[in-house]
Image 1 (tube, rainbow over the protein chains, first blue to last red):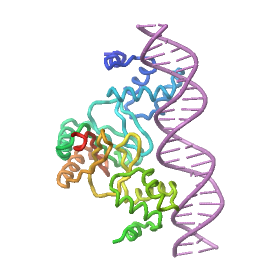
Image 2: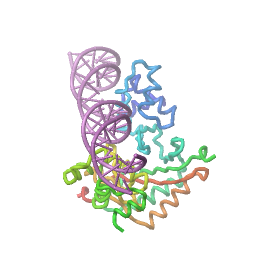
Image 3: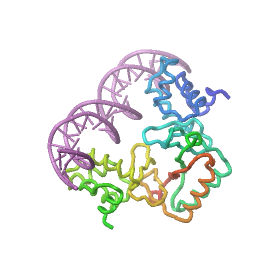
Image 4: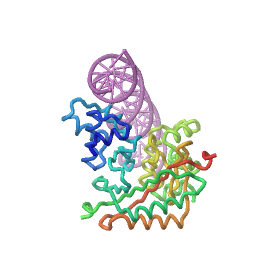
Length: 138
Length: 138
DNA sequence: ATGGGTGCAAAGGATTTGCAACATT
DNA sequence: AATGTTGCAAATCCTTTGCACCCAT
């Protein structure tokens, strides 16, 4: 399935701008900021504005095509990978690393859910790590 | 130990303004925003500025007297309770509820630590929940 | 022609900064 | 006196808004 078809399936008209943002997110799974997405795409897409980047990211986030990451102090980041995974932020170099480990992830989430009193309705669980990445430890 | 002594112990001079902010955080464990802290304290402390509130919160956060909560989309909140606990945000009323459960929390953290590859140094694990609180479910 | 989509420029809001005055040692 | 602390006002940065134009149906 092409990206355009994917957008259509979610009820989003695949305009040039939206596709550009979507492709960028898929091809650059580094959790970019809105600013980063704009500045990278702008040269090749002179017909792109920052407003549209924001509009598009909001739209994608509503349709669960993008996850909003608030792991940073300063900036909001967008993650185009919506499969379940966790994030580790390096305090030294600032990079954000994805952690995939389905089995443990499931355990972790189910344990997390036990901790929430049953009178509450739990919809979302967010887990973030911080520390020093392997690169920076050397 | 008085709050003033507590600050001194952390190497922070307990000025009137800093004590006011610190007391407020301790007496209002509702994870207020900087704005909230300022507007609540300003009437009684005419000698308090928003700048000082920000300065103070940054200082406290450096000294681990305060935790910064980024569970909200819009605003940053400050938590004066530094004992380990989790946060649950109600999507209806917007309240943020603390969850204390030492035993499960320890399990959760140790599992979380397993999931992070050992090449990385893990310093902090942050877990946030979102859903509907018991009040709002009725 | 109509409704959604876009982009500019301006507005908004939260936080930070520069700097002079003040307090404390 | 020297250093740390404060507060005003201005600056900054990120994001949103208003509105006119454009494109696709």
